[in-house]
Amino acid sequence: MPTDDSSRVEARGAEAPSYVLTPGASVTLETDFSVTVRLVTGDVTLRGKTAALAGRVLGLVARPHSAAQLAREVETPAATVERLLARLESKGLVTTLARLDAGPGADRRANAALSLFPDGGLQDPAPGGEPAEIFCLGDAELDARFAELTGASMDLRVSRQPTIGEAGSPAPRGAAPSLAVCLTREREDARLRRLDGWARRVQVPYLAGWFEGVTAVLTHVVIPGRNACYDCLCTRERAAAHGDGRPGPGDEESLGRRLASAPAGGLAAGDGLLASLASLRTVNVFAGRTNEAPAPTLLQLSLTTLKLTRHPVLRVPNCGSCGRAG
Image: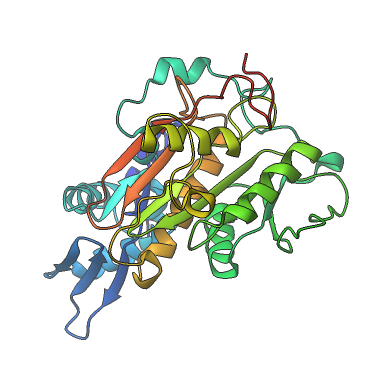
């Protein structure tokens, strides 16, 4: 049974860290009772008398858990679980939502002051008191992984919708969704432009992600009329790639993407990593923790080095799609 110290850990406050498995990692329990954690940077094997406990904890942190929650689940003193989590974190096997959210150069004071919506996030209740709804418009497997991760973290209704067609768009059953998410295994410019146009028509924020070689890419939360649209993003990309903002050879389809040598879809960790990034950003936005100061940012996470880079995305003055910046 759990001991009293688990309640003491929980009583330390609502800000107790939530631990999650490192994005893209997978856990295997071996026949010799050791535990192997496969990371994109290599495998880590845990042996010894704590391996069994580590395996149980690693299995649980596929979804966010505090130390107190884990202690109750595995029926182990919280102090023991905390020491184990510190060891796992030092090996890069687990991390916290706060550390994933922070990234390099995060400005917490500015983040707290930033308000994308009047209430500081996407927290407006749905009609009738129902949970807010998210439309998933991407690849089926990525949508399923995103829905599992996001539904486990917040009371949100996540539904898969037909892909936006040339002449139409998903038809909401009632009110428009609070957010649309489109995750694909490669950048599909035509689909993203249809998504951007539909989002402007129905005034729905959206988030998009894809792979560029062995790099997972995640856009900022695009809020129609409030921040940079997809055309703004493409214009900034072309300017960075060619110095003048004009399209270069092949830009009509790829728009400056930098392809690495290996396809990310071939890496077992790829889908989980992109879905985890998208889910984390979604949960933080709905909770009012946007971490987008001083400007919305596009994220790029290498599957081979786990290096995260952030690129501010500013509106283009007099953008032909979303209008004047100001």
